[in-house]
View 1 (tube, rainbow, N blue to C red):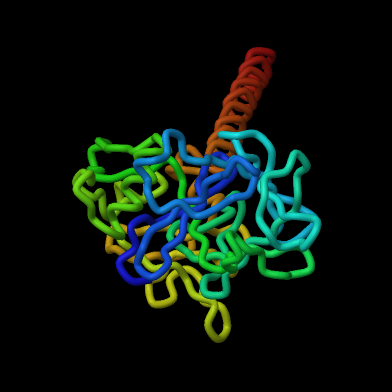
View 2: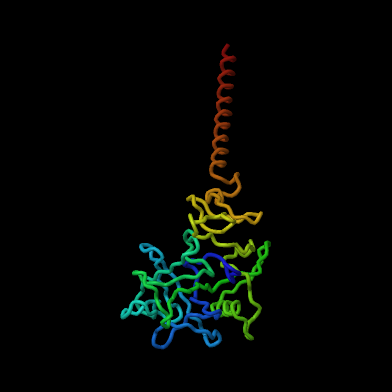
Amino acid sequence: MNNPFLLGPINSDNSVMLVSIQNKTPYILNLSKNLQYYWEDDINSLKNPVVFNISQNQSINNAFNFLDATNGGYLSFDPLDNVTVINSQTSTNILFTQPLYNPWDPPTLFLASVIYTLSNVTVQTLKIQNIPANNIIILPSLWYYGCSVDGNFNIINNAKASAINFFCSISFKSYCPSVLKPAWTTQKDCIDGMVYNYCTVEKNWNYCGTDNCNGPCLQSGTFCNFNSDNTFTCISTNKYAAGPFWKTPWFLGTVIGLAGIIFFLIILLIIIKEIIYKHSKNE
């Protein structure tokens, strides 16, 4: 990815917008009065950008339902042609696919700044204003930027501000504030401050740490960790969750077991001493 404006995972907790870059011009998905979605290139004309909430269909790969939280209804397609993107009161499975990057493990659903193609379940590419929906970017409302290791951070937590910063990062206008770049979707990534690359699909699927990329781990029970030497490696989730060794269950269990043994030996010694004492007294 060349010079991304935003990096990181997007999950179902994020409210998102759908944006696109066409001929170096930024666009955002908007809804017309006839309930067809279209590309809007004037961000200032939008009072409230169309914001979606995401849910995933667990039974179909890459299938999602996008609830239009601004207007009501769902992102769908016209039943007359099965490809024209419309707003419908019925939820519809829409496939979001991208061929370049290795998908992250749950709960991550999408990757910021990555280009997706929208299609129906028969894998026909959908169309927005008769334009193939094969250049779609998932834009979250929440961004982190300007973070420091002592825990201080700045955020964009507003759909309009997020959309404006996206537009301004592509094409600077007179209304643009200072472009917040780079930015991340999580506070941890922002504090780490690493402008990383996602792991690519090429050849045998690259995983965490390949050419220092950030992505899924091949071995189950591990996750991709950013280290102090600016590298990404897979570490055990159990090890990470356990914290210091003296707080781990095995250590605490060992201490309790040893304490029990010592207590038993002390009691045993007292009993033996008492028996010896009584025996010597009887003599």
